[in-house]
Image (cartoon, rainbow over the protein chains, first blue to last red):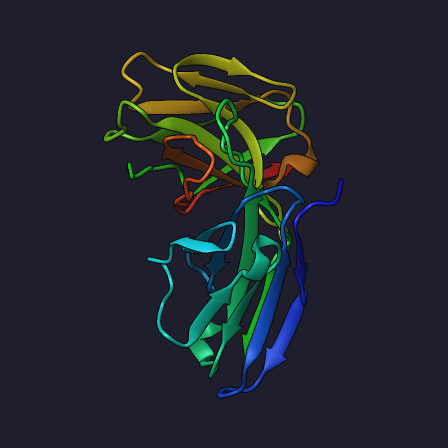
Length: 116
Length: 111
């Protein structure tokens, strides 16, 4: 079974440009999360989808960030326009719904964003 | 969500047992304690979860005292490949709950 996949693995853009990160969760996982870690800081929660609906977007830093999950499958996170402080690693994770499980999150390997 | 406190770093040698303790004084009744491991350039990976007493799996053991205000992750006979960052998280343990990460403990294993 494929794990959580993220694309691209690394993106280098200039300040003011737009970047779109993609996450494909594990098939059948209704919950999808975005996290990021900027240089030297902790991994921070950004938002949580349940299927196509945004369950919690309290961690989104500002309106330059737009996350979508049309159809409840893959998700995209767009940064427009990108700023220097947006540089970091963006992680996507997914989990199953239902009772009796640990709530384990399965993480992708991350998309490293470098804004110059 | 309950805040957690862990040592920033730990050093060990191959073959030793490593115990990483996490404090979570404000843990709620419904909260579980979960540990994740992260290698460089990878996403965090679930290790173990527990509510009270002791939990053991093929990778680690988790010891939780009766007051649940702390927990200890025990890694038996570590190897070089166990060098990673270990995160202690506290939450209701249910699917659909976002995890809040702290700074984690960087474990360095030497030969």
